Amino acid sequence: MPILKIVLNPNPSLREIAAEVSQSEIKNGSLKQTIVDMVETMFAKDGVGLAAPQVSIAKRLIIVNTKQGALAMINPTLSKLSFGQEWDEEGCLSLPHTFGKVKRHKSIRCEFITEQGDKKKIEAKGLLARIIQHEIDHLDGILFIDKAKDITENTYNL
Ligand code: ZN
Image (cartoon, rainbow, N blue to C red; front, side, top):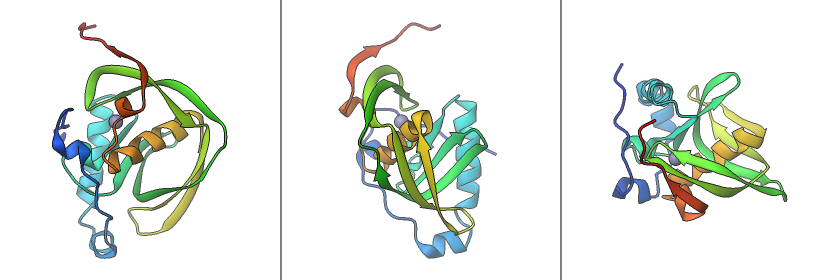
């Protein structure tokens, strides 16, 4: 199982609007190996989330790390956003040494399709809500540095 190559900023792939995954792609199982590889890549790189455009796949697919393990979300959409927002630090596997504070909704509802093709929705708050918002931004070509304040570049090898 290969670890996928993560594209780094600035790379035009990170700025594309990713395409919806079609019903036939879900039914014919062509994404299954991609999902396995993305999960493996996320864990290998100590990430908490990974969006398909970060591995040069321009499709609306994200992996997020939850307490129950890695969750693949196909065509995710935010359907409910809390009024309350909060700032917290974020990083990104495509910007390995950059960190900054980003304002995100404290809680969200996200509707998506599972790799089995089932429609599902989850309510998330705190860190998981933040990860989902960050990863969905990737599908629209948005990076956290577009929204961040107090950006720092840590170039030390720790
Ligand atoms: Zn990211």
